[in-house]
Length: 474
Image 1 (cartoon, rainbow, N blue to C red):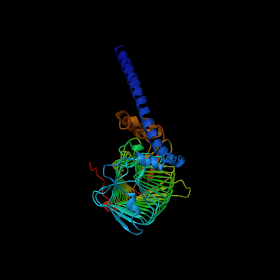
Image 2 (cartoon, one colour):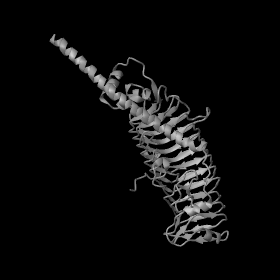
Image 3 (cartoon, helix red, strand yellow):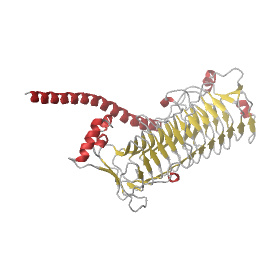
Image 4 (cartoon, rainbow, N blue to C red):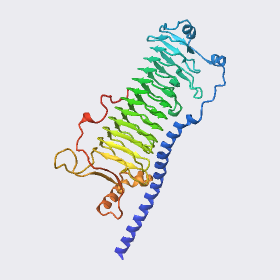
């Protein structure tokens, strides 16, 4: 009897423990499911909002706006100085505070020196450029309005062939706002937004129906997005983007090149949404964390070259949603370093058409995952370096004798049941995984297979070439 009582007490203890684990699990399930699904859904919803909700006109007249502006004492009106500058001439501003707004309607140069400030008075946009061949450099733009429906900006750009270099934008809702403005250069500017919650800030650079622009070597911090809409042939290169929502976001934007940019601490590094024929080369994307954290994201985008990038310590290194969307399209991932991410490559669903070759997968918590049922094996995987591959190279050619395979054992339970992420790396799940591998009662699902896993990839052959790793400056 004593032995029977002990067995009963032991069984009751197991049942009680199971109930406790179940309750805790339900709480964890709710938190994980809500955070993950709401996170990405909110990002994609916010990104499409402006496309279907054009801004309402500002009901205030110019006279009303002028009455609302407040400038520092002694501010010099800017517009009379612009009007007095002949076409083709140069307006050299002294180290003073100038009062906006300014409207440029003929080709001129406006040059500032350290201490040259154009103040917006807290209302509307600061400078509007309507002429072609305008150059503005060396000016600090400060204190624009804070209304999104009127896109209050430091510089509203409507002309072509302009040059905007070495300016500072601070306490302005939007930085540069381009609308049907082609072949401009925006270079070496320091751009920030207002001190607002992330979703309420303005965009550092907003490009709408504008083609052939060069946006390079800018320092962007504490902004919302750098976004390109309905635009082609733009080059976005060498920018440093930190503490923002989308580092660079392409929407219905094709044939653009994203080169040598560095990203640190944004919610999303780069996101391509309904965007085709783009290049993503030599970028460094670090620390895109949180429930919505993504290094590089795709939604219904095709024919993209992703080469020589570094994806480091992101919640998801690469996120794929219905891409490539064109049934005859492709996306190529080649010579990238994907390291120390929560998930290296996450597929939203069973999809095909992507090629992953000669990439280095190092130190990721999970390699390749597919949400729900399905497999990533309909994509092409070849010649990648996997730090968790186990095997031999008997002929010494640097290629493994056996494929690298990823199976849906119990350690991948959370892919089929996302709520189970709460238990990732827990002793109980590790024990279940170990037992299942010893003697599986069901056939595991093959997630992906690389027939030619590499044993080594020389450092110069993978990752960003020459792009500096971003570091926090404060």
